[in-house]
Image 1 (cartoon, rainbow, N blue to C red):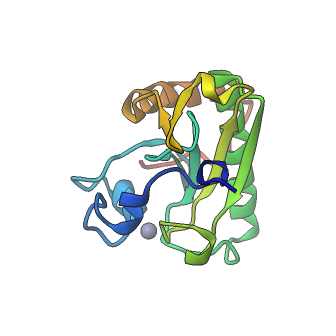
Image 2: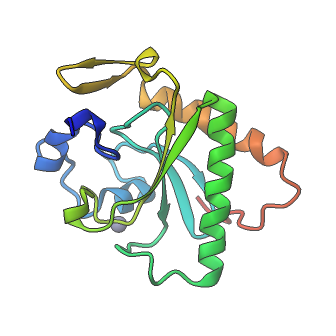
Length: 178
Ligand SMILES: [Zn+2]
């Protein structure tokens, strides 16, 4: 399998090696706390989780759903948290359909270092897939180049989440604080 065909494995070698990585214990906890020097690409907060763009997206619109507490496993989710997580998946899929009209999605966790996870803090990937992915990016020497700035995407995505919620009769996981 060529490197660019591996799921959930965007080109981020520098990041994995620690070259470009901010010197913080957990990048997701730091983003959540709004710490300086950490790119904040969070697009939505619910009661127990948040949704963020991936700084090294596999495809445009690559999102991650993360717990608002530091955990490395999903086995300790309560039933309520499982339902909240599922609701966020549904919300995120609708937002991505609204923004990008993808042809499909890859969904899932990489848990633990051997799985390819480069961030220990649990994160659930939602990766939109497109009919012609080369229409969105060029592949140069196996490196995927995404032609969209994460910050520009973030601002559009925040708006898309609020638009989508207007169509929901009830969203019981409203965050009381961001
Ligand atoms: Zn963390």
